[in-house]
Image (tube, rainbow, N blue to C red; front, top):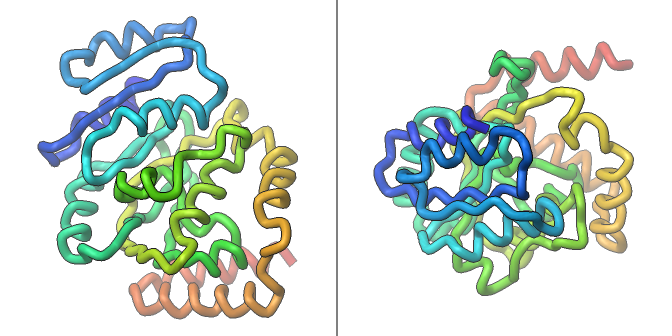
Length: 246
């Protein structure tokens, strides 16, 4: 948790409203939070009804124009907030701005880099999670328009939320830089709850799942945009990885 907190407080961006919602942890989390309490806008440690409920509690307290959430084991990279603010100024019509993400181990070592392109509603229907909360910011007013995270979902609430954000032609922007690190270890939901993810994704996509043709189209779109961004080595590595799987 402390690395997560530091990754926010050490950003080279002055206007940060940092809210921490802890689910009543019985480890050292509260002691760590208290260590930085004077630099937090708000914090609380109390039982909640799940991760989506905890995130919603924080989002409802936020007052800034742009909001995001970061999980307690994950991190933002230096410069992420400043780069996001620069893109927001450049693209004032954007409702969602994303960066790239790294998979990291328990010691912050890089396991794999994951690069994205500008996401759309159709690309999410076709390819799934084409962005990540570890490197995503959106305008707070969207919660007034489309609500908050679905607290009935345990693992797929982020996927369902970003689908709602992008539905209706809302504009997204992408910055080709690593903004966040997703920590991978055997205790994370991403590692040990794949069956729940799959079940919830099927429920979310029921009646609107993209066709195979749409999936191929968006794969080609992503490949082209990657090349335009100059990510040639990344594309080659991805193609080699796919070839080795067959």
